[in-house]
Image 1 (spheres, rainbow, N blue to C red):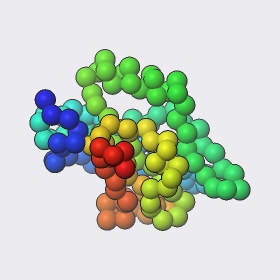
Image 2 (cartoon, rainbow, N blue to C red):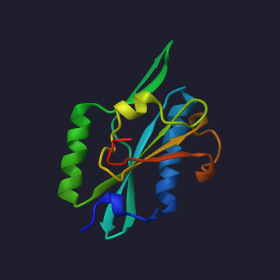
Image 3 (cartoon, rainbow, N blue to C red):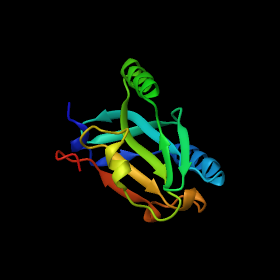
Length: 145
């Protein structure tokens, strides 16, 4: 079996995109960042996303900005569930209030931390229709970058 770093083809159902975008837009209306996860199964170089997971999350707004936090207990629960379900985490998707980019906070507190995982950032609290052309996409490499 190959690792996520070997994935070159991803199948992503429209329903997973809709669920993700709906969540990001909903929390964005309140002025908050949101997060969703895409999980599924891998066969060699192909990864099939089978569902969107909306983890329990806390939304923080301060004078310095906004962020979304997934607590350690929720991360543990998700990891146990993934293991028991035979699923893998491929991507974390979260929103930003303005332009889409990977901040230093995004780097330091990522949920998807396996080499080959994706981190997608949706701009403008997901107010516009979902469009991969507007999403900032990053892939974790061996140097944790």
